[in-house]
Image (tube, rainbow, N blue to C red; front, top):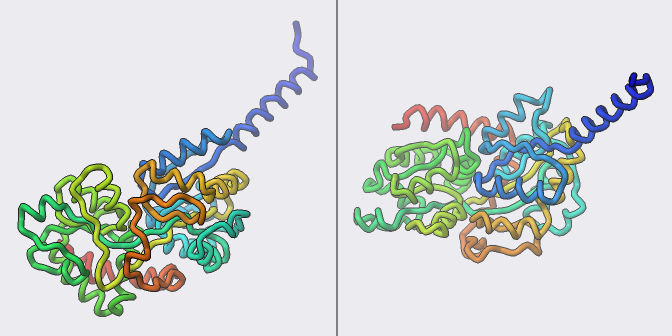
Length: 341
């Protein structure tokens, strides 16, 4: 039987409709947290929604660079997690767009301030303090004394025993750099980092890699966010987390919608979903022990509590500014990286 013209038109319309529906059901996500929580978030979201998530795991610094490079033709819809400074920089550079979630008033003050400070182009999804984790078995075998303060990490006994990430690629390491500058003053902080460099065996790409290396016995100490050290302890590794005595900075893990997102409606769906207490309470199941931003989300019992840590009044706005970030990273490259072991 011959297919009529009307029949052909109907078939074409049906095919077009199916294609449009498929296109509407996708979301391009960059996740800057640990791969385990990234996979859990992706899986949970796809179970709850008829939306396929195309996820890439990149560190915060790498994500910022990618979004900036693709600004004229964005390939990413939403950026979830990773330290807040690069998110703030992306907001300042006009790479992300304003969105005020209806769940905003359910969030902790620090999460709301992060949103307000960025012109509502990013929002806090979790928080965690900076510190380090050390391998207790290595310490016992080698007779090391527990480092309780930033100053203790300069102990010559730790030569080649410490790892920290590169602040160009890692939001964790940039937070460490900016924290030390705020604690000590810029020149003194760089003097400290030059001395610390003698004890560093490797500047890793990923922020959590140093404490994973410590857990495996490949290094004694990893400078990381404390919840990453606690995660290794929860996995059964001989790792102890430390909050430095002089004070420390902290991260506000953030979330941003990319300006020009091709799947904007789906990005907003993810954004609102990720701020719900049910979703944030699930993070502990992936051994992610940050403090959730939703006030009613369950705080993991393992999570390092802010009230137990000497925190500085970390200046997210200043150290998230593109000019300040560029200045500090260039100085780090010139004075630290160029002289690295």
